[in-house]
Length: 139
Length: 117
Image (tube, each protein chain N blue to C red):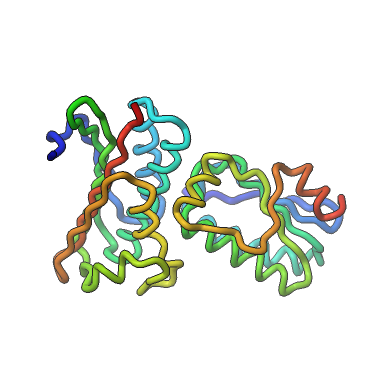
């Protein structure tokens, strides 16, 4: 079942590492407003941190959008990370633990996928990356 | 705006008390200052208090690990104190560990772990 179109969307442009902090604060605030518990707020902030850093490191410029989505009776927080950077040639490797083309632990994408409920990544080499992640609120 | 984390000296122990969430360049700045101070003060131990931090992601954890290993090369030890429960849970789920790096509940327990000041 497709989630309904989001409401209350907020966007943070990501250009430098300080924007990573602004993006995760934006996400945490929305999570708190939506009634997520503190552990889920931390997971959402952490997921945004990883996705926003990927933008700074690999694309240089992009944005993080957070919004409320509804599916039937349940409500979720959706994170979309978009950039128009070089894209990811090998999505399978990028999602594997410990794989990195940068100087990192290689846990950003696979780790983020583990801490959210729904995860989707699309990339066309040369045209950028779009990652969509949703955390559903526990009933 | 850049955040400079205060590093206090108590005897042969350095205490870096992080007051707010740091961006990557602030964390790297802290890393180089701790390593300089360990040499300058001939410190035997470094305590990094992260209790005010709401997110420790892969970069933050990697850098803390690098600090601890570099300090060890100097013959000193590092204790990370005050990881908040929610932060700890996120780290574990993300797949992050602080392998071989001592951790403690808070500053007092950290000081006790390294044998007082």
